[in-house]
Length: 358
Image (cartoon, rainbow, N blue to C red):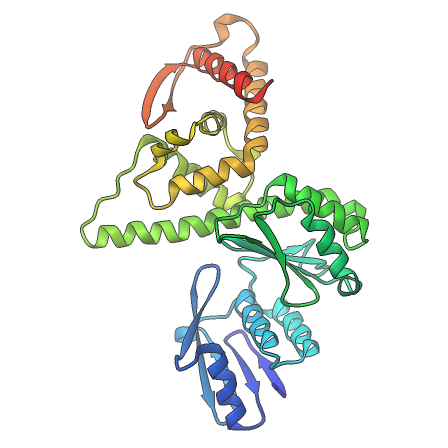
């Protein structure tokens, strides 16, 4: 058991009391290794032992992130090597002195009620409400009723809910899923009613931003590796457009902030038949990500297109002379096709009505 701990911006230091206990803790983390990787970006953390002390630090003295410390403390707690009270104390200190780069602290750092961390195929919610642990089983049982059977709820601590995909597939948290989850949390008094809508908005934008960042992180590494050995990356018009949009969403996570052309593009992708997603082949994992993306955010894409269409009609008037004066490239399967704007909107509206029932 860890007897004491010290946290600075550069390292964590644990006092195990004697050297055999320190060696045991090091072995639990890395077996015979000297480092491990912290999700979601596989950042390296070195682990060192000196007498009865175990140290955790980033290579070359780089500053730690809040997520690094939380991962280490959660792991130690899972191994029953540290008391929950000590974990809480160190995490509170970590939030004060360390940057938080891939966790949503809701509603803010000083009044955190919920922490949300999103990974490639799972998301974790840590609750700071004191009554959560007493109600955890009931809350999890209610929430799981609102999710499809492919999503499983698990927990490593009494203050946690973790959503995982059953088969390890990519998971993006949709507005509908978060809305249902938030309703359960409000009903049990975990979230105040006045923060209900804000939680859904913040968590949705964070989940999309983080999910997109994680995908781009590994994709750009794959592209770089392919090019470094003389390989070529085959990109279609569709994949170029998709990567550009995903880069924007990785910066702000707000679908409604995309422009008119992006709204048309995403609406068109939403109408793809399964074989048309081949338009995104040639870029590592892009086809699978876009299939998951439109499945999760279809309603938001639909709303965005309607908003942009209304904005255009409102700014240009309803007369026929105001429409169809420009040209724009949109995708047709894996090819580019140029048509006038009025024809573009007419065709999209027709396909929209047939497939979505408007």
